[in-house]
Image (cartoon, rainbow, N blue to C red):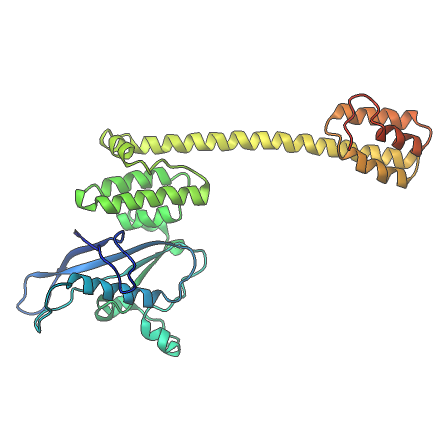
Amino acid sequence: MQEQSTSGPSVRKRSYANDIVWRVPFRDRSAGNAGHAWLHLILMIEVQGTVDHLMALRVRNYVDNHHMELWRGRRFGARDRLAPVLPIVIYTGKTRWTAARRVIDLVTPSASRQAELDLTSRTNELFAGDGYLTLDTMRVAVDDLPRDNAAALLAGICNPTMERLPEDAAQLRVLLDDPELRPLLEIVLLWADRTAQRSMNFDLGADDMAVVDRLHESGELEDYFAARRRAYQAQFRAEGVEQGIERGIERGLADERNLLCRQAARKFDSRTADQLAELLADIANSEGLASVGDLIIDCATGEELIAHLRDGAPDGLRTG
């Protein structure tokens, strides 16, 4: 597999220097030809969270621009041929991918409804850029895929789990270790890092390639990712306990406020209880609520109780 340069402007003067196009040996099985041509693998890596119904047209435009760029400055002769391509779109959305697979299906959409199109059986169209393959990561049974396959691991990091992400990311670093695959490796690990942050608010620590390379060489990369996962989980649990305590305290104060309002209604009337409820909302400690309980006992009328509270008595009571 060899990386191809994609530097250059598109027809619309938009740079695509950051795109990656790979070429791989493509065996020519025609009679009398034992050699091989090159298959240009156009890997469109996008965090495509929604269905893009113009994807077929975008792929067609991308492939055409790619061919024009490869032949820029050279004469295309009668015996020359365009290199076959294999466009791949990686989809990470939750709903099923329903976009048309070919441009013709956008022109005559009724034709695509007659039967489900299987582009894998129509490779001539596919390799000419009329269509694309889709990796729908939400519908891939990741557990059934081989762990020594980069595509399987890529599907895993698109829909990551906290327990498996460190292992998958470290294994991708192993499988994509070839220097020629370096640009792809950097993109994939950066994607893994951002996907973890977006989906789980977890910083995997894969965005610093200098650190990743050093730990990979020492055999500590998976342990490093796993340690960051454990630290995140410990922090998450600690925050959960703290929030649980706070919620428990607040529920306890709410119960005390309700009890005081019931006491005021029984001793005085419901109007007093309603006024008391508004004043109790600003009391955020049990000591203040206990003082209100004493006032309910000591005051002879509801008007006297409300007047005491609005005057700020007793000491330490916080009211609005």
